[in-house]
Amino acid sequence: MKGVSFEDFDGASLKVGIVAARWNDEITLSLVEGCKDALRECGVLEENITGLFVPGSFELPMGAKHLLEATDVDVVIAVGCLIKGETMHFEYICDAVSHGLMKLNLDSGKPVIFGVLTCLTEEQAKSRSQGENNHGIGWGKTAVEMGLMWKKRLGI
Ligand code: CRM
Image (tube, rainbow, N blue to C red; front, side, top):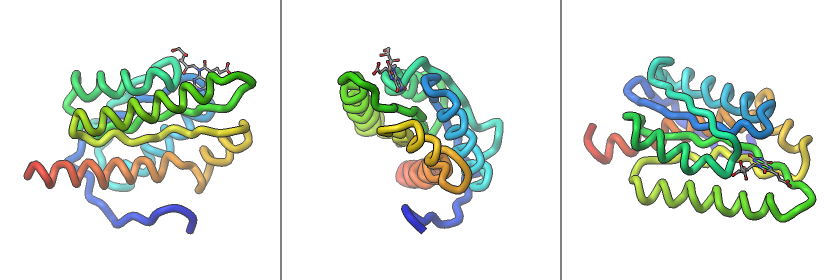
């Protein structure tokens, strides 16, 4: 299998936030479903999943920060899809979002999962957001692993 393998987690105690961009929403909605499928498989309760939409991927760090500060989530998954156009917009947003989300991880101390596809074509984005190759599944499991790690470190 390409990618990473995960243990069987018990996420029943976890509260998870998902912030998703509306740009390329056919892709991002499917990625969010992949995340939710994985969270459910790991035992995360439906009522412990909080969702928030923002306009585009550039807004994801601010949306994730809002979830961390205004709710009691243990971990946030930031979901977006950037598809390269004809200008430099793609490069600037990719750079800003990845740095913004990493900064939030380190500054807040809570895990923020990088659920952003950065694709050269729409076909690449589609193939990574559907079926068994839906990358949201891995991001959901990563959220549970990192959320449990964070709770264990705090002894809660
Ligand atoms: C995205 O998720 N967003 C895109 N955005 C929007 C951007 C942000 C605005 C306002 O702050 O800048 O919401 O995240 C884009 O503007 C573009 C256009 C790129 C271009 O070449 O014109 N693309 C995306 C995108 O692919 N994904």
